[in-house]
Image (cartoon, rainbow, N blue to C red; front, side):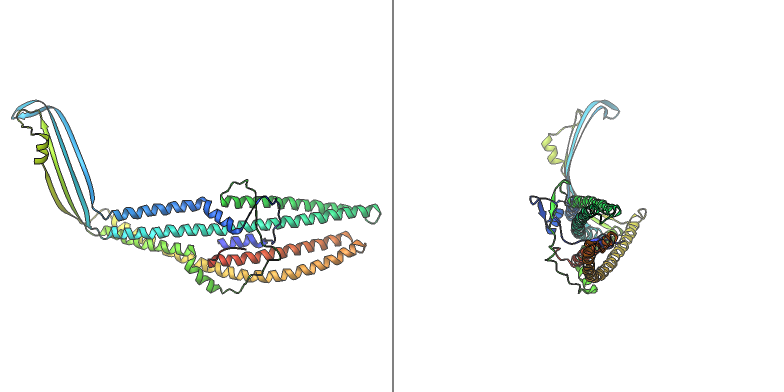
Length: 447
């Protein structure tokens, strides 16, 4: 099941207006504030940004690899013991020598491997940046999902509390009517059962609301014990969103800006350059080198004239330059295997890119179809609620004068409550599905 399908399934039961459960002193967070807090604090974003920094370091290093290398060295050796000082003559002596120098080398040609490595590292920087955008984009959808889940649970709790209040009033009325002989113990028992069921619904709603607040707090990476409210649209301000979208137009727009597609495209480009880098190992390598050094030698051998340190360093200067050509003939098929692996990786990235496009096409077309279905459901549930509300009013009036029994009243009340819940659910479902379209179009999510 794809990500959109999971989200759509979750929000198949969304409600509308929010009900304040905490005091006005608590912070009220808007959807945009929740998104901003998440993008600022979430560790997934920071991890992706660290990867960006590593890619930047790799690029700088690959650029520096074009410059000549320069190294200095100093070697000192001290020896003692029996050494031959003349033909057939040995004696205990002590020798000391010092060698110092610098050398430099640079690749004149290496199959353009270093140039292509720079190009690939540039492409990988784009991969890193786009991956960060994808991480942020995925988090935004998660925040929207969690945010609206809170709204759903708040409205669910409000509806449950209203049903509990009605059930308690009904129980009180039944007890009063029992006292005057107009109701039986069976009617009172039925009313008590409804109160118990309503109390359980309130408990379930309270637990669900607490969990949804915790989920959003964890996404924002704030303390789990944080107490806050979320801002929801008022009933009177609800405006039915437009459903006049062309699925193909939405897809073509998303194809250009959606991070998942741009990430897969950047990975493909990096893989293409990876093939060129691997091919560089198949070509001969031509290098130029140069060296400059001097040495000093001292021995206790009386037959050796030890010049001064300064004189030896001056007299023993050596210089050299050289060209080195390395032609790959056979190296355990490492170079060819590297090229094959790079080409296979390229085919995988191209396949991943096409899969990303195919998936985007499916979810966009499904999202547009779901939005149109949500509009139809919203209209039909509105009509059904109006009808059930009228029906309940009639039964309630009849029940109050003894012309309807408790079963008829309970059934009518249940039908009315269910119709109201269905309407709220359809309203939020429509709102959510319209925001999903905005998400794929790259629009800012706001209520």
